[in-house]
Length: 280
Image (cartoon, rainbow, N blue to C red; front, top):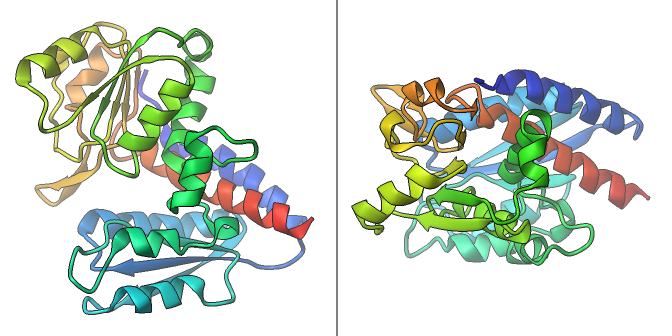
């Protein structure tokens, strides 16, 4: 089954809009970006449109390439926003410290779950912790289309490809909370380990950002394949999985049109939750 991420996102945004409308005021989500790549520009356009669908306004703050950590933090902490996003990746330079910047996102405004404190609450499964948007999206797909698998995930063989902050790390933490047997594969993994793990996995979550890295013949029949990897190839945004993988997958999320729209919708769902909590 090829998942229609836009349809799922539309459902989430409709509910979010209804929740936000009860506030009776404009909800502002600020997005701070530096040196955006084609992939991040695509996400920013999507976020701006989906913010409106969620009954919110996206305030986009573009900082120059030479901006310092202090200037980025100033934009993050400036008054006037209900939630704040820092668009990754940030440039690595002597004047920029991504971890320092992310840790300065106020907990009560961190809809992306990127600050150390917000992520720690999620990783330790604290009460009231938000799920990072991609993980909330993965959960949504499984609840809708593989609830039987989700209910019995304890002990199941699962592969997470990539160890990045947006997909790999939170996916691994969440799956381990659920009791799955998780194998994390990265660029450093041996080829034999890579192929062996994929061939036996019942669920594969991709977040490497490597165009069409995973081929059909690497996977088992009936695998649940969640492609949350995005990169540019030939001027187009593509995923980590070759589209032919859909032929044998029980569930396949395409790129574009799969996890991207769902994760963005879950981001605004998180923003609404934070705003509603602060208003009580």
